[in-house]
Length: 437
Image (cartoon, rainbow, N blue to C red; front, side, top):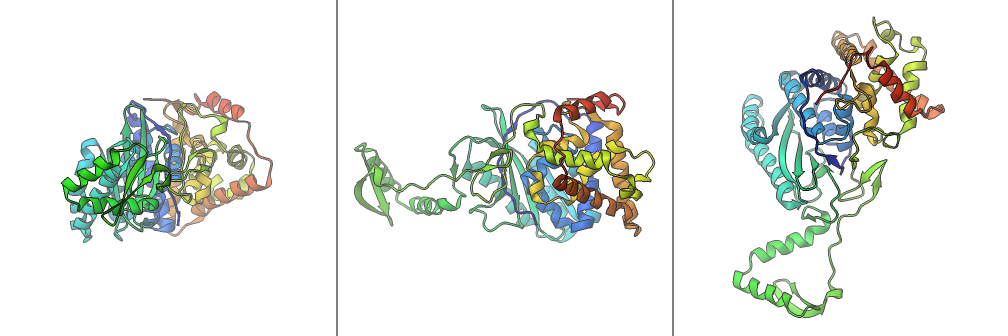
């Protein structure tokens, strides 16, 4: 099971996802979801969605802008369209959305609960509480504008919601998951994705337990008495009144006050800083639109390209016998296989997954529609055959991932980033490369 948490910069981008890409994202996203369900069960999809790094990589492999705030809206919209039409088969249901659609979440949850026998009232309360915690208890300058609640037939759930800071033109994405949830008010997030704005008021942090207790205690005080105590705190500048158990203690020097330390930070992978505790999985997405060599683990990318372009065809005989399958589609399928079978450590460089199907903003290259469609066809075919008991192509996808790992670990495969992107761009007309806003 993926244990996750996160923090990342998500620059706000305007524009819309063109229909030609939105439809393909829906199909590919649903196929990847189905592959996860078939291999690991529906609850595993919730665990993956609760991991910010996996989520960002997932959006990149679907052809969205690899780092922008729009990845949240577009991915969840694609999944809602695809998963809900097959909710009974997949055992999953997606509620909510952006803006006015987020406010439909309680209604959608209750309707789904009526169909499945889940406790709708409890799910609605959970949805509302997640939103209130992130909007009010974590005061970080971001106002929520998107809320998605994904629930499985087992009653487990994941929340993916996003807030906006209009002044800094950045977004923060929050992830919640019932799988790892210990408490709604103590380290509840499986991930927080957004710009590091320095110290914030976070009453959900473990170290804020004393503060929460004091806030509750103060709420029970007589208002007039509380005002008197506050006024005393304001007097001499070098002194403060410490309240212990509701009583006023002697004045002490400011230097004697033991302050609750802010959440600790550490670097995590090639991106960003960790928010909350050191076990979180966090990314900070850069502001530049283009994909750069420093955004990618070049050895990992080299393993993918070497697998696609130099591995002997007989290694994947069942796949290679598929009409029209060439090295470029194999490259995309290798990255798709990693999204399905990869472990958490594989998703620290989400930009690498844009080498599957490019990005709608043209970075690192335009979306190659012919390659994208071939990837959809072959992945869909492998899933359909596995339902009939023919698992050969599914096993081939697993071997693709395993082979890429082997090549990466045992060969000198660090790729020339400039040459790789130049090749993709030179082939873009042949592969029907397309951009759109």
